Image 1: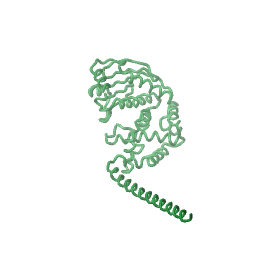
Image 2: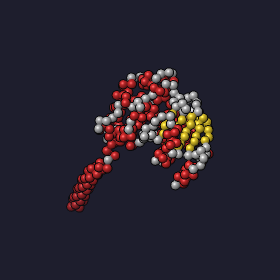
Image 3: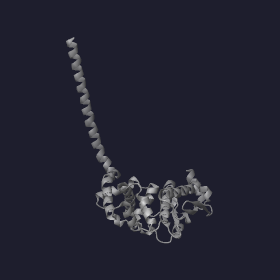
Image 4: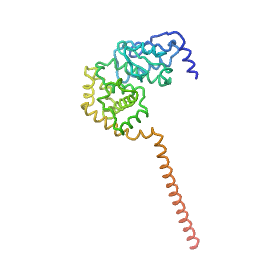
Length: 301
């Protein structure tokens, strides 16, 4: 409640921006019209995440970038160069490097969710600094961003599972441009992207991601960088990815259905009842045997 009051207060104040240094360049932050000193938690988040990206994936040429959290929809669209999907709540743009987010109030998200989005978009800003970044498919860029922000949720995994059973999985080759997907399909696309990055690490080891980026720094495009790092062709990884989905996401969709609970609960109760009766009979039988032994010992005496 206090946090909501706090953001309501800074929302009505004048727009003030400030600039601070990060590991990937100077960041200009504008948020709700509030002074940057009033939003230390977000500043620290940007500083920490920028440092984490450098530590894990290597240094990049520092360039200025900005983070702007808009106070209304008109402001959000005015900051963008081009169209944005109707499901989009944030965009990372290039030249100038800028992250534009909807405020939690207009995006209908929590403060914690907004922090995840900031981390997600910072990952995009970082990847923009990698040579030949334009050759990266959406599944890799979004999967990397979701990995950084820990956004690969149970809901994404259930969506993959449901699509598996309906035979509606999106092939990796169709995950090159997420902006073309509707709101109903984009959750699956993001889930598959996160699963694809997981699959890379599963099949080729923990260093595969950094090795791909190292290869791209040596002027390789994404496909050549992946093939060199994995010692396999992209088609081989596509096959591995499909196997990874089949092996890891086949049954999760059942947990999204309340009907499943009503189906499985009676079965559990019946199994429990049968087990209880079986156990009770074993106990009674043991007692009978013990009584017979005691009686035989009494007769012998």
